[in-house]
Length: 222
Image (cartoon, rainbow, N blue to C red; front, side, top):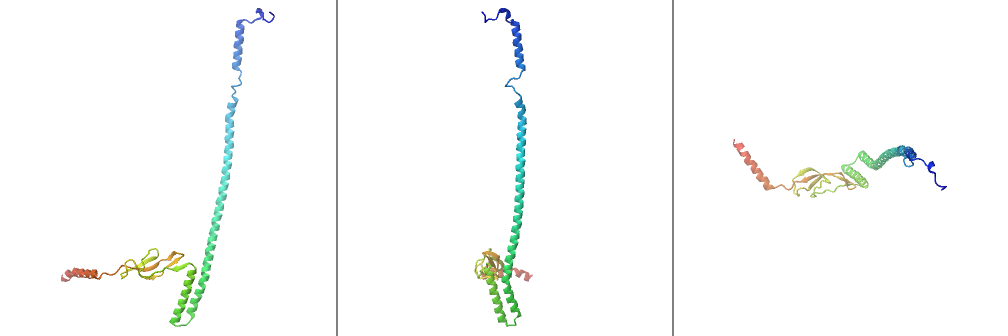
């Protein structure tokens, strides 16, 4: 048949085996499509580049936050200084307003000292000045603390200066020694008062006197 290879042209089995071995060696020596080491070598470099970019972004964010913090600190310091100046100006304005209202009272005192008058006229003049002063204090929110004998002692409003025996109940006020004042319902100065220790027990006092006399008798006999 014309399509068949003649026997004399066919390679021998040894030659065929050698060709097969040579082909297998060539295939094992040449790199295949799947075993490519380049991507594995390039992966660390790509990660390093990404880390550098992320670090650069973090540095930029840090600088922006640092500048923002410095601006806020400067703004707060300026605000604090401005508030101090405004507070000082407000205090000066309030003091000036108070002094302007005190000047007429100073004028009245000066006029009273310059007048040659009787004691009664002087008393009336001082009383007028006192009323004007109390009226001024009232306009400023200052009022006296009400104190009356027999009123219970209140540590919030009163200061106990003396403790006296009295017919009034113990712990009540006997008399006012110095007037106290409130400023808008806050204590500006406590009222100084004398507080009752209660009525003196005459029977107990006589028994105490007898006991003292009996104690002194042996000393006298000796």
